[in-house]
Image 1 (cartoon, one colour):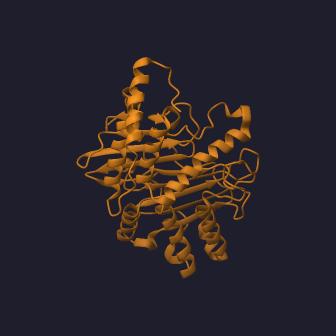
Image 2 (spheres, one colour):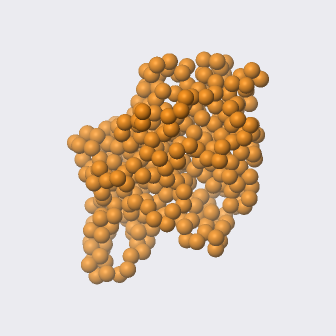
Image 3 (tube, rainbow, N blue to C red):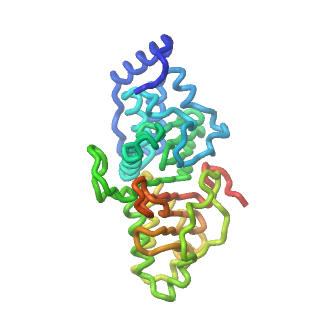
Length: 354
């Protein structure tokens, strides 16, 4: 529910906008309509439900410096308007915008991550300090959603940072794409929350375990770059990914079965996006120098669950990073995932650093 002091002007504006929202329920996604156009429609519908004071927080100029600021740590303050500051009808329109920006798989993953924050609140009790909250996810529009021109959207909170740029009705950038999960595997039952055994980011982790365990001793010598996992992914919160030479083993040094596993990892991260965005990522990957064979796989840390582990999959057009080293809220080791897809040609539709 909306948690703003009861000022008469705001209360009246909210009453009017919410009444209109309830009279005009959000339409389902239209088949065959490009994702960028779906996002224009959903963003406009959401903005139309907001009172002026809400819109002032939700809407910023496209060139606002906050557009390239991102992070996935728990924070009291973030850019944009939080779900907690919306009434249910406005929340539904915000979720419709999120759904328009992602595939069904990506949307389901995002909503599950939000629900894990409620689990953390219950597990941590007083330690949660009001920061663990399934409604502390913030929506921001940069520029004016329209079929012509350029605008952007950010959806961000603990363990979630999704960033999109839309130009002339087409999604031209969809990074950084960050998902996290604490716990990575649910170990305890809570009513109306993910069941024990649930793994929101199961494929992101399990496919990489399957790949590293399949390597021969000689292949491991190239793929495993450190005995211990780093503390986290690189360049967290930075506008662009780090420019470092790729490490690990190239795809063309893998067997056919191993190549298939590597491809499934890449496609798993792409599958969070609408089909056309995922397809464009894969087309750019294939068209780059060396194509699929130029992709490297590097591993650090343990090759069994419960001990810190980390991997990087990267090619000329993208980099994936995954880290599971921190304990969960109940102290289970290496049960806390951070993973990201970044654009080597430049996140936020900006040129990559030289």
